[in-house]
Amino acid sequence: MPYKTINVNPDTYERFVYYKHANMTFDDVLNEMMNKISEEEFYSHILDEHREEVRKMKEGDYLTEDELDGFLDSEDE
Image 1 (cartoon, rainbow, N blue to C red):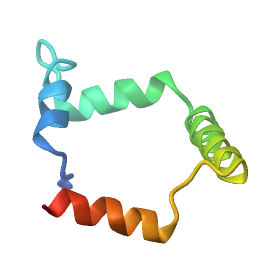
Image 2: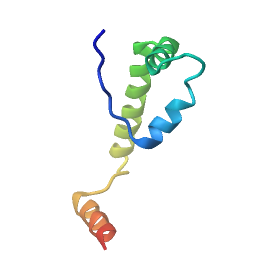
Image 3: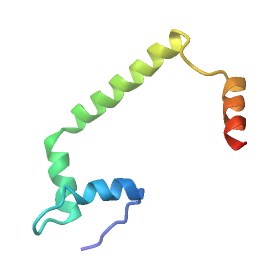
C-alpha cells in the first residue's frame, strides 16, 4: 500500500502522539478524528471563523499596510 508523507511542526507532532494508543497507527488516529466530525461541520466552522474576521474588518479592526510594516520592522530590531 502506498503511503503519503505529511509535514507537521514538532509541537503538533507531540500533541498528536498523545492521541495514539495501543496498536493504533497515526492513520488510525486521523481516521478516528475525521469520523467524529463531518466535512460539512468542519467547513461550517471554518466559514464561521472567516465570517467573524470579515465582520471585524468591516468594523475597522485591522492593521493597515503601513502599520503592519512598522510592526514587522520593530520585530527585526
